[in-house]
Image 1 (cartoon, rainbow, N blue to C red):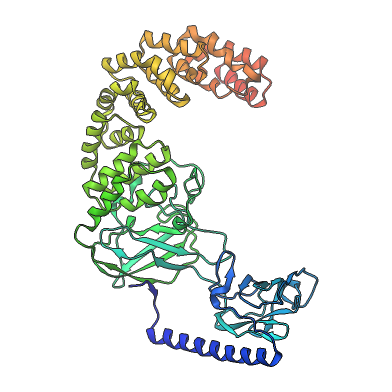
Image 2: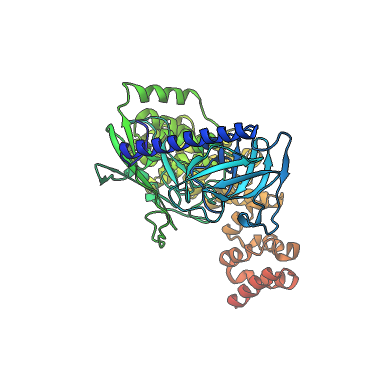
Length: 548
């Protein structure tokens, strides 16, 4: 069943009949006028009236609009209008190269005219409700009147394709023309975080409960930036995935039947303690969910799995949100495979999506994958979230992968050792053995985390290694050296405090003071004397005074 708004079939039929009759009568009148004048009448339809890049749903006072059609001006005509104080809308002329546009009998402001296109601004007297006729008059010959709804456009909802039980249900959102917003899923709040768009679903007039799995943030949330913002994608998504939301990630559609959905714009995400400033709410839209065929989801999932890991933008805007929402084993296999994706954003999204399955089921699968395939940072995070005190066990299982050639697996093994505070003797030996490999294959972030894992072991060999990293120019390992607190490192560390006027390493001064205490004061004062950066001077001066 095609999605539709609540209105009686009788009212819709009467409205359509009235508009058809009015259009037919207008067409006959225009044809007679054209015959009498010996010219061809301008011709266009409602589908040829646009706002921006899409068809106009209404005619709104002051709106910039375009008509595409035939015989809208004399052949070869190309004229541009300018604001000159004319009585037309916004000061544009009411007539341009012999062509006029009438909206409900009122002259529009003419901006551009050619044989097949007219740009105009709707007159300010356009009503905010009802129906108006739009006509083009070219060379004294009028087109048929094209009836169009009058007033501001509203956000409209529809369901993408046919909705089935146990399958993805995408809510398509068509914002009003000229409004400065659009739906750009996914949002930073996670798979079921729809930014500042609150979506309600009801059945038989009763609100439906939200999926428990929609609450991925139950393990805590750390956030910076626009709380209503979207993921920053490396590639611009296809237009087909814009202005839609995965409704099945908030609500379960397990039974066929008629449902209703409504979207409301808020000043903050639904459920947050921030003041929720409610904005525009759409009308309730009815839609039908059909019974899925036997094996329909299983067959679809086999096709998804056969595609392997897709690129970041497709994974985040389409594939992963489509798979989530139903806690079956096949879907879990697909989602956990994305914990090894090369994109950190994709891995993070997959991690949050694991909230749709029971934690123990996910944990068993990840522990098996950790031993068979190796860790990723996101896998290690989940294991740490769901069983406190298991960091050492995870680090031991991950240790063999400290010499992996996979950047994702190598980073996961390093994080496992770092978060286990260096781990036990087996992990420490694995760290020592992997040092050369990590320094060669790891990125800057990996090398910094690896040095911190070494520092946490408190092993003298580890200290010699980390100091060697710093002396060889691996400055990202400097904080790890500072954290070890060896007094003999102070001259090497302090020399960095006055590099480039002190500004580059000003943040390091606090770490130095915490690790070395009063022994650091002479070095801080020396750095202060050499510093030229204002921020560095403030920080060094503050610490020097506090240390006294």
